[in-house]
Each structure stands twice: as C-alpha cells, then as structure tokens.
Image (cartoon, rainbow, N blue to C red; front, top):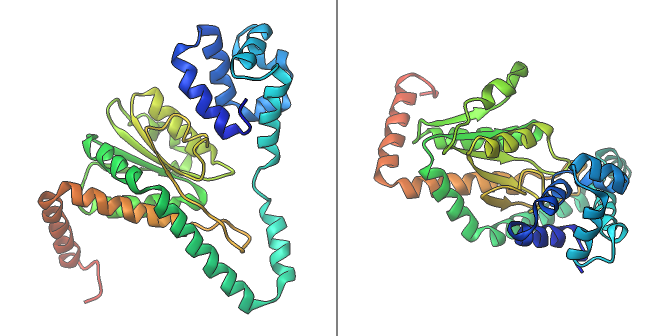
Length: 286
C-alpha cells in the first residue's frame, strides 16, 4: 500500500492504461481534483467523476487499500501539508531580529536550493531542450511571482529564435492567447505551491490542443506536472517570508544555454544579428 500522495500518483499512472473505463474515469478525477477528494464524501466524488460509488471502493482495493476511507486519508494528509502561509513566516521574520544569523541562513538556503536543483535535473534539462527545439513554436507562461522567470526564459530564447511567445494574460486576454497554442507546439509553464490558476489553465489547454508540455515546478505531482512530457524541479526553501526563486531562475538560464548549444552555429549567427541590431538601434548606453 502506498504511503504518500506522490507514491499514489506514480502507482496510478503506471496502472492507468490497463484500467477499465470506469476505473480510468475515477483515477483521473483523483489526480485532477485532489483537494476535492480530501474534503468530499465518496458519493460526491463518484457523482463528480461520473462513476458508481462501488467503483471507487474497488479502485481503492486495486491500488492496495482496504477501502475508500484508507485511500482518502492520503488526500487528507496531502492537504494538511500545504505550504505555510506567508503571513506566518513574516511574523517569525519580524520577531527574529538577528541580522547576521539571517544572512547566514539565507546563504545556506540558496546553496541548498541550487545544489538540489542541479543534482535532480541533469538528464531532464537535456530532454526538455530537445523537446522544445523540435517544436515549430514555443509558448512560455509564468504568472505572479513566476512571471520574471518566464520573461527571462523568453528574453534569452528570443535572442536566437523568433518563434517563441509569452503567455501573459494581461488585460484579461489569457483565453485569447491560449487559442494560439496548436498541435505540435510546445508550452513551458512555471509555477509552485500554491499553484497559480492561470498556470494550471495554460498546462490544461496545452494538453487539450496537442501541445508538448514542459513544467518547471516544485513537485512531480503539481497540477502542471501531472500530464507534462518533461518536469524540471526546483526547491525554494528560504528563511524569508516568501519562497526563493533563485533555483527557478537558474533552471531558466540552464535551459536557454542548452537550447543554444543544440541549435549550434545557426543560433550563434542569430544571436550575433540580434546583438548588432540592439546596439545599432541605441538599446544600450554607448
């Protein structure tokens, strides 16, 4: 029997192709709506998943649980381990007062974030770069605090590739922008817990419209990672009130470097042309 939500996701995804249509419908609902499973009755979950309650019991047993209640405990436990509210961490920070200790803690946290992120993404970053290179167009989406990461990735990538665009959703235009994501394209979505509704929407539409999906996120079972083709994970520990995005920024830089290396001399030529134009048009102080 699985002991964590992450293990349960791995188990369901491995078994999914062999499940009956009823079990597939139930399992898909569990993965797509984990919060609702944690707070709803079995009958309500069955109604929303459009399956019989008995199917959820049998699915639970197939997954190694005595019954539905034991399976549901996994979802309840996941809900209880949600990120600490920012206000709670802010109060702790205000009470601290030791500036020297805080600087040391910040340095240690950032070193840990970077070391962990680089250690777990070696092969993944190469696979993600190859996936993006094959796509005729790449869409990049990051919202709220993840917007700078998305923009940095876009800016670096656009220096040597023109068919890259930002999904920003400004002035309520998100749904209009999502219409441009087409079959065969690729989308890069960036988000961490608590996950942006807009980021989840971009990931959802990308899969619906036949686009490849790369998720840059903090969990292999985040809403944008569950159906992704490639998942690049970053850690965001910080003694500050807000999660650190240093490692996420490093992933964006790392990914752009791999993309340029894969493109080779063609990318170098485009980069040189972009630099010449920027200087010629007065983009920089002479």
